[in-house]
Every structure is written in structure tokens, then in C-alpha cells.
Length: 160
Image (cartoon, rainbow, N blue to C red; front, side, top):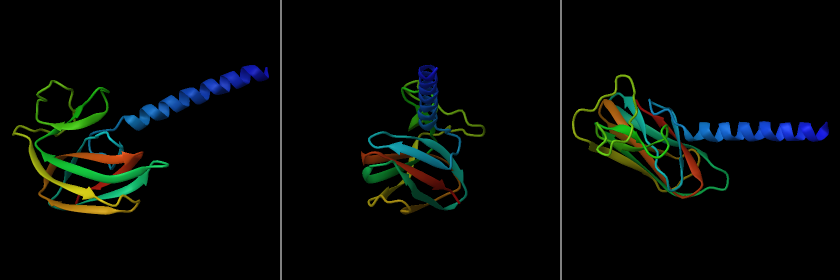
């Protein structure tokens, strides 16, 4: 009886662990408040805001992370585009994507003009609470953070 309960308990832990990993990898590209980025990988999300100062804040670091720098590229006239994992958006691309990759289907999001760079922000010192700001016009932007180093980082995105 004890062995059966240990096997059953182990199966439950394995299933819950895989659900958490899948949940951590899938990002809702339609205007998330935070985005988690593993080092050496890109993530992309769609954001909308009024004219003014957008604030990006480091709100979390994975255990034993050594992130040396975070760069966030911001694009106009783009949608997040999926890579190898269908629900994981990693690139900002024009509509339609020139390589035929699936793109975010967000209500009210459109991009008819060519993809353009709107700006970027950089964190040179990556610590929890570090903040970086950029002034943008009112609009919808594809935000693509990238982290350099080891581990992962969670970034809060606060449009005006």
C-alpha cells in the first residue's frame, strides 16, 4: 500500500511539474503586464499605451541567475511571431510574417505599414527593482526583451 501511494504521489508531482513548466513557457501576447525571459532567448509581446513615458522594471530573477544585461527592443507596425513552440512568441514581425510563422491574434491589433523600430531600453545593472524608461507616442507596440548571461529575468511593462 505504501509503495502504491509513493508511486501515485510521484506521478502527481510529475504531472503538476510539467503543467507549471508549460504554463511558464506560454505567454499571453495580448498585452501582458510581465514577461519572463530566459537568458539567450527572446520573447515578444504586444503592448498598447498612450503618449508618454513607458516604464520597464526588473521584478524577478530566476534562482542563481547571472544576467549581465537586458535589452528591450520596441517596434511599430508589428505583431509577436511564434517560433518552434506555437504559443511562445519570440519575434516581432510585419504582417503577415514573411516566413509564414503564426502571429498573435489580438483583437484590435493590426499592422498594415512596414515594420519600424520605435526605440529600445537597456538595463546594464540587472537587479530587482531596476527601472528603465522611454517616451513613446500613443499606439500599439511589439516589445521584445532579451537577456544576456545565465538564468532568467521577469520584466514588468507599464505603459502610460
